[in-house]
Image 1: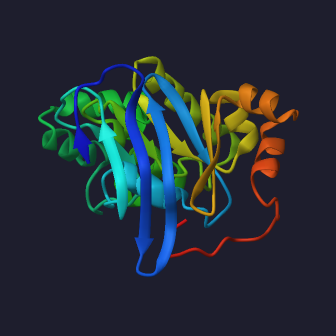
Image 2: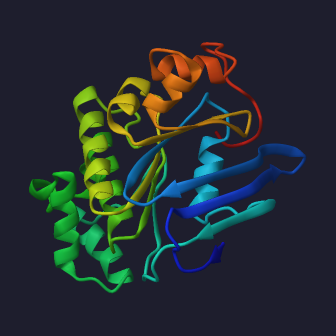
Length: 249
């Protein structure tokens, strides 16, 4: 991942990125910018390349071709990442777990407590991480992804498996981070919630970017009434069908 001083505009710039797994092409000629101070939602069918793109952006996968450029400030931690299924070492409390990650970026326990307040888990500080519900584990994962105040936070399906109220809470957290200047990129299948809450949308299908823009601009440009309509216009619209490209979604 190349790196230079942020000149304004996109804090992460993806240029002509390809990603292959063996002979299978999962991303093809992907070009997109992710802005600071905004929540950007990555949407698309299962198997469209969302997780692969997020992992490339987080620096966990090298692109087969093209570049990902970081234009943000020089910090100890530039990008925080939440995987689809966060997991933590058992036998430790929530606070101990977050304290460990805080120490890795040179922060102290107060930073861990601050992240607990952000996600609303102050009362769970002394609970064992292996005794948490799936929703609470995901919130701990979001707290971990934001420790050290990285300029970019990448969240892979942060609302997956959560009830509607918890999903709304997760998107509110994303909005709070963006209001403080963070670039938040998340993937989601909850199109109604995405339409109500995010600043920008990136629609991907078959490993290629089909549409980008704010929900309102996308609706206006395509002459449709909702983000669901944008999704149907921009994809094959085959409900219940999984695109089989490779090993990641």
